[in-house]
Image (cartoon, rainbow, N blue to C red):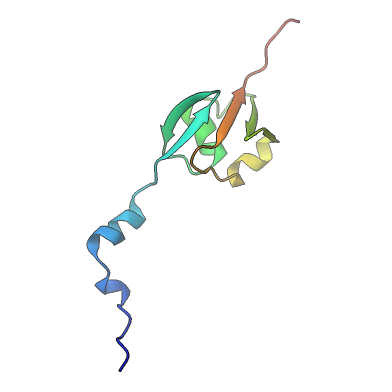
Length: 89
């Protein structure tokens, strides 16, 4: 006789709590390790206070345009560059 599968209500409380807890990722921002709850590049940019300013971004060496930041998911150990424009030459 086969054992029945547990119902969602039977899943351990600690596992269910994990599903509601934001994951923390270690990423590198401009070469410095940082821990973040940001799931997307847009959230990370906002966390650093650049949500309303013009910055260029890249993840693992690939340029990410502003319109794609909301859908660019972050993963542990990603290397993120956030660069603000500078005057002069």
